[in-house]
Image (cartoon, rainbow, N blue to C red; front, side):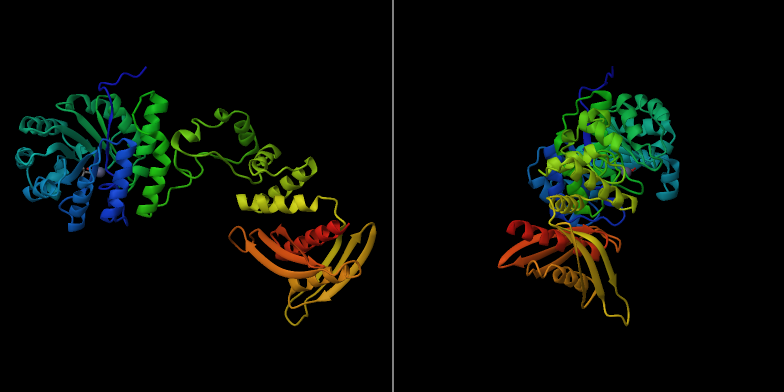
Length: 495
Ligand code: KIV
Ligand code: ZN
């Protein structure tokens, strides 16, 4: 059993500050407000909305978000500089994330200062921020590469000066879970936050370890956005704590997916398809064994139900799919296929998968439409089909059809191979019925020159019009299939 040293973990979201530092990301004040509102609704405690000193737009964001009256605490990043603190107070922030470097590397190389100067600057800045009525979270930048006795000194004098909270920054993702477990306990002079980066893929593990070792607040960003490899991903952290450690976070988990997609849309940073919890594939199954297992009991191949984070399970079809998942996908769309029809649909789906392509929902529907149509006792069927086309050749098609046990043939030229094929079909049944092509439409369902194409035709006979479809990777065959399906329907209806 996990015993936390604090009653409830707090979440400090830095999507709008560290997340916005993702190369190429820049959020306008109204986009920031949308994200902040969602973060507050979902239950985040502190929202770092930006950096007060960075620009006028950033200060406007602080003003707009602070004025929105959200339940979450509105915080802004500041340096140990009076002007930054004034901006924070003047534009309505509740708190400041006051950051001072604590590693010698940062102190000497970046700021060209001494430890003593930094310690003094920290104390003065804390005192000033308190005098401006702000809550203060005092952060040690690059703390994981710093002399820990200096980190303790800055933190303890900072708390004496009035800092309300402290934050340990693993600025370049240098911590390991083992080191985190050692480092955190001696730093609890005040409620302590942990701020991790994912340069070595340990941000989440280090954050969880810090929380178990006594930190009370986790800094995180939605979708793990942030400098370089990013920060601790909020959605993974919440589910990790809840599911693997049994800790009630109080976060509205069912809103997690809509938060992730909102942030992805507004920042323009796509979600990696295989990303934990929120990636497109996180609750998608294709393999026959997995999909079959999931259809019987979802927990066989799903650690949590997708609904928990506001998502739906998807069974993706491809060469690994079995008939159980294809039948389930059809049933979900209210398609009722006989055993023979199902076999044919499975065969066609595997054929597409074998060609190295994804089978989308639209593909499935197009194939099912075609197969279900064809299967209703055809009046005529295709025995043979030839088409000749090329440069300096008049496109010519010939067909041999079987109509009620008898073979009939037809041939035609056309403006192209598709036109020739359709004309040949029309002519071959001319003795039986006058079929006219009213409309022809083609859609590439998936991308690429080898994509599955769906051909839709409108055919008429004696004023009666029907629509039918064909779906193949070959446009001529899809057209032939659509026309034969249509003629069958028109002839069947006559009978
Ligand atoms: O990673 C870091 O050290 C930071 C600080 C600026 C707080 O983001
Ligand atoms: Zn950071």
